[in-house]
Image (cartoon, rainbow, N blue to C red; front, side, top):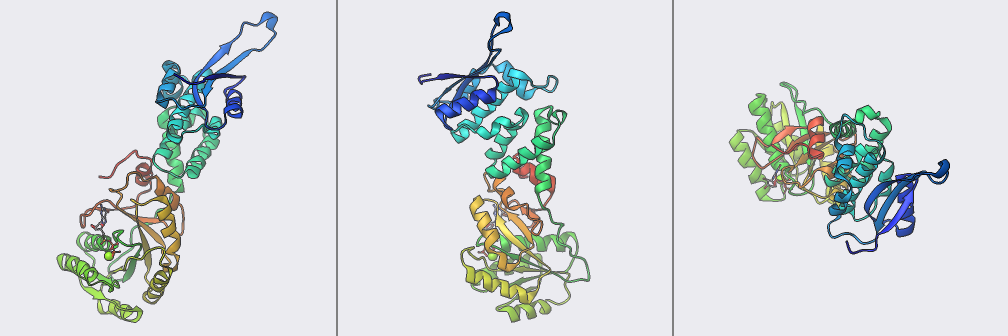
Length: 379
Ligand SMILES: Nc1nc2c(ncn2[C@@H]2O[C@H](COP(=O)(O)OP(=O)(O)OP(=O)(O)O)[C@@H](O)[C@H]2O)c(=O)[nH]1
Ligand SMILES: [Mg+2]
């Protein structure tokens, strides 16, 4: 390796790394680490400690540096259930995963040094799944604080502990509570093109075909003729009554014209989260319709920033559920974690494709956590 590697010593790994950091800064790359034992004359002098080789330049392949740490020690530290990781083994395991993280982040993550080594790969996994860094830290920190060494004996245990912490952090809604004889009105709102109309059709078909309920559709998306035609097509195929509301007053009346139905699904026009007046208008319309549930429909295939922005900007529509679409299109689902913790807006359904009515499922805590962690995939 053609760079100016320097050696730093410390009584502990933490101390050695602190010196690396002081000297080379946060961008330092750890190339190797070893335990130093000194034969002590009459028991005097330093007892030995940890020696770390570090440099400022990134190696061509950062993982190659990790491989330089003795493989046996690394695997003993990170993968063994029978021998609890101690001493140098666990330190090397820590270095190993640190270097892996370096390759992702391009910097030395000082924060990780205090973490039990079993949790560092899980932290890396959360970041890889695009879980926001702060949230990822909170999760592993919570587990680190609460778990006993036995709780984290194997990598599988550590992953389960973090998954359980994530599950606890998710807010999940019960499915739409539609029963025969009591009309329930459910509105879908959200940004443009996220799948509101398709989802309304999926839900309508499920409640009609699987639960035998009387379902009606109401669209208040009257700005585009294509929008009405789209819903009309589904209404015809599923054989449902469709009502059209052109303003708050007629929308209210249109619901009554649907007659004796158990469930009314209200499809609304997509709105840009930046278009405050239109969202305000939507809020006024819904205030007139007075739906029992308002599901904010968000595409999982959008960035964490867009998700947050939409979640904030749609407040005037008073959504009390989140409905996540296009999970099948998302590269990773970690960003969702950022918006799924609000108890006043639990997740109701997930949609996983274009097919009506199949590609929809009720939100499930364990499934969602596994999806976010990348332990499970769609379908
Ligand atoms: N891959 C995938 N595509 C979906 C999903 N849900 C909807 N779509 C597709 O997304 C596109 C837009 O769906 P719509 O239901 O028209 O979306 P919308 O929110 O009603 O759109 P606007 O009314 O224009 O705001 C269509 O091509 C759908 O087939 C999903 O879960 N996965
Ligand atoms: Mg639509």
